Image (cartoon, rainbow, N blue to C red; front, top):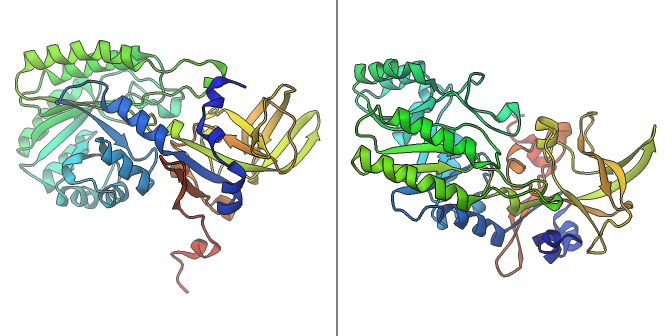
Length: 414
């Protein structure tokens, strides 16, 4: 058995009892892992002028966000709903940064009425904000021209993305801000999601600082993030080297701060990093068959539960349990693991080596804490699963109940 899997939190809990009590499939989170990952980020650079923001779109569970707040992270939001949940989790306006994209005047007013700073990512949105909030404060999202990410759908900078203001439109942005008396207090970017090499991020930091140097009296620069995690860790995939990243980042920021003057602050938004490895999905094998040479393992983890594989061709490690024992895979066979949704693309893993499985076995999909439940749906009118937190004392705590059939009627009028 891989040592990493021996140490994994799923190997410390009674998976069968959890599934029996809370249903299958089931999202399970580990508080210890979550706090460890947050602390790695919060302590990345030990300076009072450096902070780290949580991306609520990765995981919006109220209880997990409470842990994030306790550990000292700030938060980014992209919608009124995300702001509402952050407020319920105890974040005040000073710790929320709204990074909008193609939004209405009503949405902007919702943000501004709460005293939350808004970022705009186009000249037209800057005009809109200027009209409804003349003389106010604003942040500008720039696209320095290069992006990075694990899939084309999550690359959010460069020449083929809808996001941010092109660098050569800087003077136009400055003119619009001046027209409405807006004070540009920050600039930000986000180049993409899930990279394990430090170079794209460091290059983007240098590019954004080049833009920042053309503004006076900035309060902060937000470099975005999208820090990756090793989804193939059981195969030896290396982690993002945060120590190396910090070693490269610190002198760049310190030099800029010294030359720029003032009490400028810097932020990063590491995306999936805090949540991903703290979460897993437990599901049940319900059917096994061989069809035209392919052996299918049929489970209740459809893409209504986990969208990433069908949306991004994403890879997740999958393990199996029988009688609460992790199967070691000494007699692995290649199988295709599928869900219960009426779509041919409802595939968790193709040609995956797995130990011989039986109906009733429990499978665990690892590293599902980010963009898992937050992207789940009721497609095929399947009920969304419960979410359970394994607390520091090892107890299981229900932090979101499983959907009921009555929930499917919510919003209808009779």
